[in-house]
Image 1: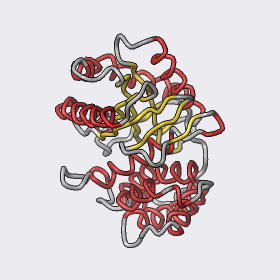
Image 2: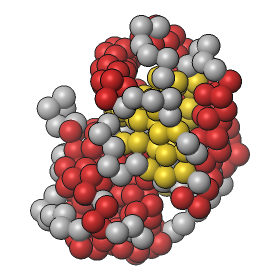
Image 3: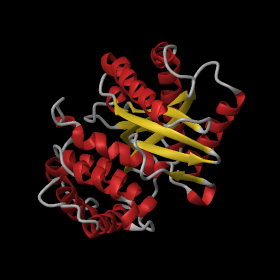
Image 4: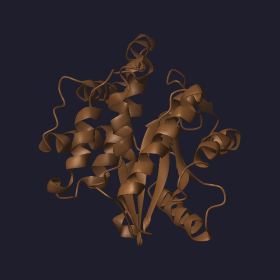
Length: 299
C-alpha cells in the first residue's frame, strides 16, 4: 500500500477528466452526487489553505465524502480510458447506477446501497485490469466481473459488507452465484473469487484516522487487514466447505479517510488483500500470488 501524495488541485484535475470521460460514454451526471463532489472539491482546492474554522466546519463533512468517493471514479477512468467504448457496456452500466445514491456515505440505508455496490464492482474490474502485466478484466463477464490471468479465467462476485452480522450471508450469496457460473462455464480453466469490501465494518465513514506519519499509517493499515482476516476468515471458510473447489479464495478491500500529522494532509488510504481458500492446489495458490503482485503494481 502507498499513501497518496497528490494535491487537491491534482485530484480535481483527475476527477474532472473522469467526469468528462463518463459524459462521453452517455452517463448522466447531473444532478447527483458526482457533480456535487466536483463543486465541493472545486471550492476547497483553492480555499483550504486560508479557510477560517467556520468555513472548514461548513464544508468538511461533504469534502470528506467527496475525496473518499471520487478516487474510485478516477481509478475506473484511468483503467479503461484507452479501451474502445464499444467494449465497455458492462462498465458503463455499472457507472450509470454508481453515480446515484446519497451524497454522504454515512447516510446510506439498506435501501440506498445499490449505487456504491455497483461502483465497487467497477472498482474491482479497474484494479485488476493491468494488461501491461498480463492481467485483464473480462469486460463481458456474466458474473459481477472477471479476470483473465494466463490460461485461467477467474470469475468474481462482489459484495459490500456493512456489518459483521451480514458478512456470512453476503459471502454465502456471492459463493452461490459463483456456483451457478461454474455450472455454465465448463472446463479446467475456470476459477472463482469472492470480493468483499469491508470499509464500513472498520469505519462507518464518520471518523478520520490520525497517524503521526506515513510509516505509522501504512503499518496500521497493514495490521488492520491482517487482523480482519485472522479474526474472520473462518466465516468464509465455513461457507466454502460446501462450495465447488473452483472457488479458490477471497479478495478483501477496505478504505477510509486518514491524516498524517507529518504532512497535515487529508488522504484516502485503501488496502487490498487476497486470502486463499484453505487446502487448495499449489497451482491455485500460485495463481492468487500472481494476482496479489498485480494488485501491488496498481498502487
